Length: 302
Image (cartoon, rainbow, N blue to C red; front, side, top):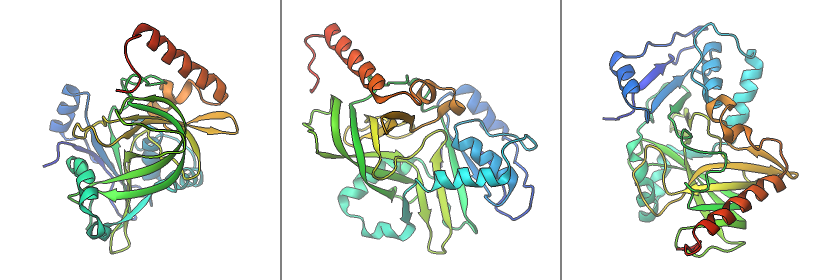
């Protein structure tokens, strides 16, 4: 049984104003006791109330209650469609083609079952957790790898038990700020990084879109500063596959956050937004030099 309580559920009907189910007492009590909670939000994309809740989840806010004002339906649809287009898609039956190595890599996602193969219509699942709670705008110390690179490939995969989805991105490295993997990496090398979420297409043609609230997905052929870590909230500890802790898109010399935790109030969303890339890189260099001076005997690569 999943340890992740389902807190909100909007019916998958075409009714104009679906109702949000109340929080179960046991789930609410668990949230008060444990800050590292996960919850799922099922949204019907046909209803305005669903769109308001979904848009709030996408930008990393607590879901809005029915009746609150927001953008009009057209603007919401455009924002949601733009976000959705960045997520890789995987066919539910494609797992039969996966080799042993891919299945082993996918096994760590077995702990987050959210897929609903028998759902009658398209559905969206938002995972709410506190993934950014302990992160700074530059989470260097929590990262094993910090690199600048371009995304050259993006694919979605199912967990080994076909109950969850994650996306894997291939990054062509341009600049290396930190590498504590114990493996040599060089400019022009390609490396993979993962992020929970993606879109699953079932044999019926129905699609299920899963994302973590406040997290975006890198886009093909775009350039980013990535903070990569072996640790990922809600997953088993491991030391083989890197996940995207957070990142910043670098476009025309300016910085745009990949993620938007806290509804845009978190330092990740505010500290470097719209600033030039030199200021960001200078801050990274200063931090790393200071860290090196504090620990002169510690090697960058281990």
